[in-house]
Amino acid sequence: MAPVPTPSAQPDDVTESYVGLDADAAERQARARGWSTVRALPPGTVITMEFRGGRINFEVDASTVTRCWVG
Image 1: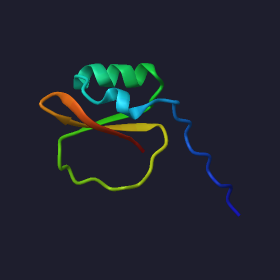
Image 2 (image 1 turned 60 degrees about the horizontal axis):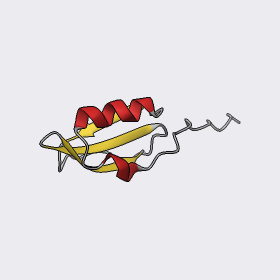
Image 3 (image 1 turned 60 degrees about the vertical axis):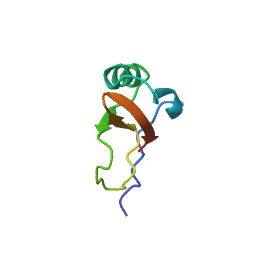
């Protein structure tokens, strides 16, 4: 039987702290806090719902983060 993969560690962070930030500043902050993948998406983007440890997602409208979630 194959071993069960260990999910990537993710930073202990508060996603709400990114809402309202400029998208570039939010990305710099997320990388400084240890997020391995930072993804910025326009509102209404269709995405798959698979969870990826170590990834933080930003919904960005007019260069401002309006929503943030992990995975």
